[in-house]
Image (cartoon, rainbow, N blue to C red; front, side, top):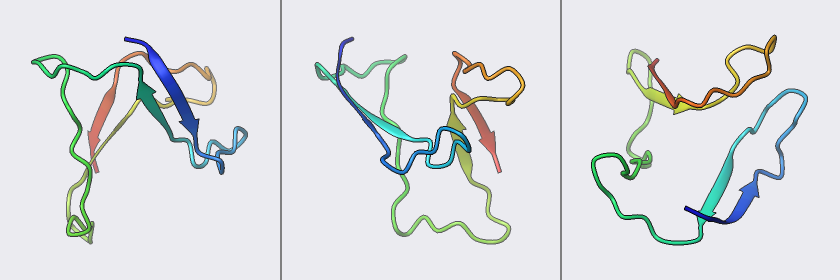
Length: 78
């Protein structure tokens, strides 16, 4: 699958890793199947509040000591 464009957050700070998010535009459309599917994004009515559990996910750096990015998507309930 080719990548047509990567859009990095203009406020990304490489030192502190704040605003560490980017968009990837694929060269072709995906075909959804059991291994490839969409991610549901939050809506304005999905407001986090005290005592509510939320799911987060990402590939981000796990420890600053190694600086290595994992190859497996992580998921946690917070």
